[in-house]
Image 1 (cartoon, protein in one colour):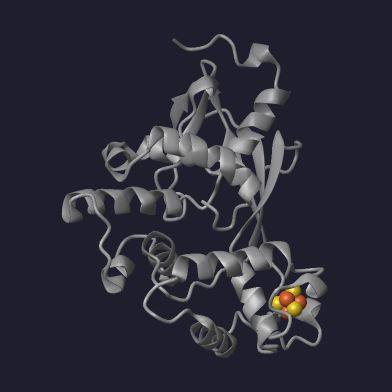
Image 2: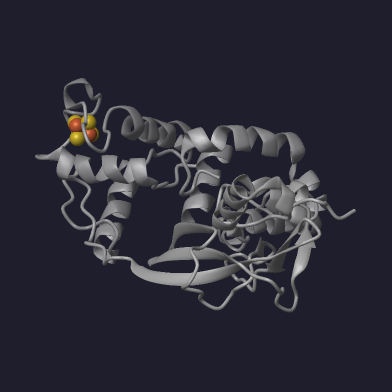
Length: 295
Ligand code: SF4
């Protein structure tokens, strides 16, 4: 949940998630629609689908216990190098190298690494630094990784590192810590305009299944021909990878094929931009245009 999402946003969602899905067995037994609904608002829905698929694999193939072999771990849905390493460090105390944003910053500063860390040579250099600092003796990954994460979160912070009170300052080679780590310059986001249809029938909102893959299993507003004469009901802007998407929601009379209608009180799982747009329009339009509710 914490990938690409702030701790403050995650805490209540994590607690709610754990109340509903306290074990891998409970998660594996749940339907995908309910899993996606519990993820709504966190974005990057692939993470929820991967968690769900991994839970099913753990239950059906590994009798409910996570495999400890790193290669097998990496074969599970959603398990890249970072997740596999984090599980090994925190769950089993293995002295593996875990590199998240906080740790990358600390490591780059300790060795005064000038290469951009989002390019292959810089990434490799970062991994070499991490390996050099990893604890020996076959264990200790849990406290080592926690210490590096906490150092990055509380003292070696991005904008104003507190070097005078840093416990590792005697080893640190950074000459201008605030300038590190370096990253390659990003190209500007490509703007995209899209028009989607707001269509209602009997007080219900028309949605279509997302063709995926990013939003597979979620429901979205149907695409509509661009309408320029009237102002849209709502405009929602969001970013997907390198695209800046401006979605204009316009009132439409007839639903496109495949549209299903849902009560505003019981909408299916929707990606965040579409869910936000639905809430915004429902707040704006007069109640009379929603009523009577279909029964
Ligand atoms: S001395 Fe400063 S730059 Fe170096 S690790 Fe500590 S806080 Fe970061």
